[in-house]
Image (cartoon, rainbow, N blue to C red; front, side, top):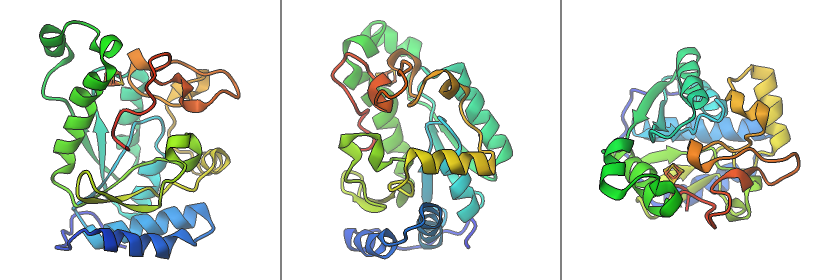
Length: 241
Ligand code: SF4
């Protein structure tokens, strides 16, 4: 086990990612698979590895902190989050052995409103996500060689082909998806067993939690991501595609 704080000079390549994916894909137990992938990333990349979290829950942060104590957890603080999400961020960073990397866009919401007009999220959500999520994450990840996300195959058709270790060609980085093979039952069982912090919005129907203007609760049985950018023909913010 390698604690974050040890930088390793290793080159990230598509071959490295494919080799690791082949090695870890066959691990049947989802918890063991996630921990193995995260340990590998920590041991291979040291301080050059970070995971991201939307703070819908602390699941990935919990697993990553078990595998890589002190792991960097990147949160995109867009300026549009629910108060509950900010509270969950503070809760997670206070109870787990992680290093919180709180990333803010170059412009505040007020500055963006002055430049582009108010409620850009309603008129051009792709531009808003680019300014407040995609570009800030690109800048934050520029300092790393590998990153991890909590993307799961069962979340959406666009995520069905997610690999546990992949090559992020857009950023020239290794991307690990330790939860790729997890089901909602796996998530619920781990959270209950380890008392992982969960965003309280989940209790009132917010199955997938993003910025407040672009997130609504979903009905029981409805696609969890149906509450994101509802009615706007948009399904992804651009971070994972
Ligand atoms: S999710 Fe909505 S408010 Fe947040 S950055 Fe994207 S468009 Fe803007």
